[in-house]
Length: 240
Image (cartoon, rainbow, N blue to C red; front, side, top):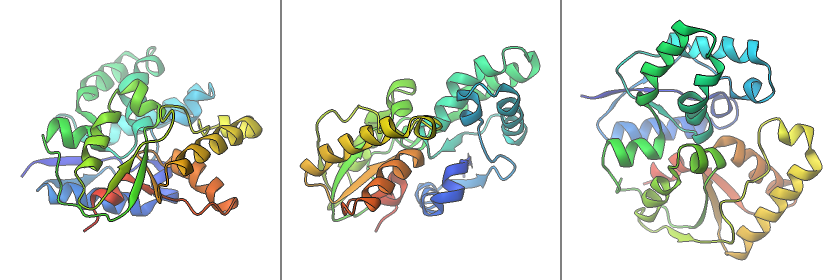
């Protein structure tokens, strides 16, 4: 039985535990043995983006110490997977030993949809989800990993799911980690614009790969009583 490591991410652990449970169900349904990375809590992206390199380094070292070499690491987040794959090179540039460790690990790190479609070569998971759904391809998933279409393929093959398009889906939701804290007015305006375009599509639910995007758009929808629910893609793929 193929064994994979699961990096839960800090946002999922704190705010979207159902996404972690669903990810495990999806991976186990593929006959995979799931090994949670219990000693790794955060990839370090938030402090890295704020220039807090010492804090980010500590988290990156912790992640590298928790990872087993030569075993796939599945990440239910495009932004965290992109941080590990693309930005550890910069963060660890002055630490040759850690940089070498990260470079050896990089080919084994995959976002969830990316892993299912490109590694497992699976497009149909037997899921059933009788709802009209809009899919938000998060920025890092689309721009850094170039893997947004993998999730779209998986959603298109969910029984009962109607996948609808909306205008300019590639535009940012406005979360951006600390961007939403430092520039709340601009962040909220970006989210409101995105939600309006999603509502035009008549979608019942919004699906995304990143918990930050789900927090941003789901929170604003709830505060404004818009009635648009949000789900992590893993929850849809695990539905029966």
